[in-house]
Length: 124
Image (cartoon, rainbow, N blue to C red):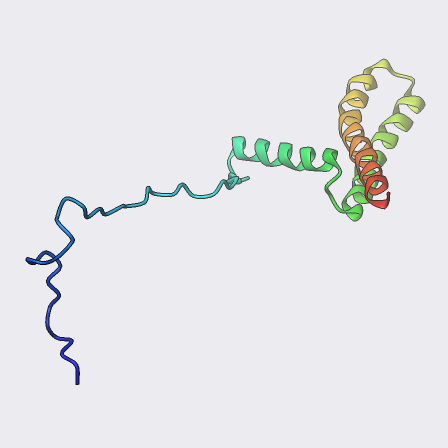
């Protein structure tokens, strides 16, 4: 059997090591990878952020088709309902609510155009 219990003598008389040549490199602490923390939608500022993030994602065209179609039904239906109410009442007071409901329709329209252009790019 070999005698492995004997400690090595690296710094003895005939060694090529001395204590000046030994280096210990300690790596720097790594920063964690970037992740976007989604705030809670239960506080007011978090709710604003989450809604903005959803609208931004919808307008960029990265949403699935069913979300865009549901957006057209929801926001477009509300817009058409207000247009019909404005035409039937012949009132100028309906214009502010028409402008407010036009904003989500424009977001869904922009998302649809982005989705269609992305579809064309991948097809080529």
